Image (cartoon, rainbow, N blue to C red):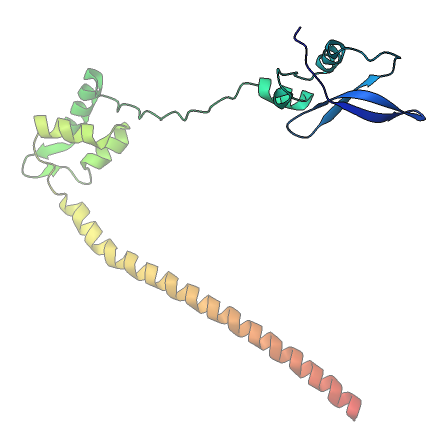
Length: 206
């Protein structure tokens, strides 16, 4: 064991003051090794005492570390490396998927001029089968023809659009009116409180 020189110090021990060997950590924590015998104990004894109590005794005083600092330094620093989430590869259409989609489109597709029978579309077929719309479009394009336009469905959308717009406007108007009614109600409540207070004061004065 290497010999280290520790500075001398003094601490109160019972009713008397005794000499000590002192060790100090970089963080400011200080420990004492009491020299209570008639003969001063060697540095090796002080070093052994400090080590036994959890201190790291360095080759120089600047390398001394208290038990807490020793514990912190001994713990490995774990560096968290963020993992880039890899996007899942899109599911590929299998032969069985293609067969099922073909059978459904074949059932509903009229011809390359009309397209689907009302009210079917690529999107409707995809929802019905629980498959991506792109798969339905691929099978239909390769084996049947263009999607076409569903006249009945287009007519429905044309009629529904203004009704939906009017309903949205009505909802916005109703919301604004309810807010205005709430503000007026608060003003009426305030006027009623003032009226009651005035009535009480007039009653007291008469």
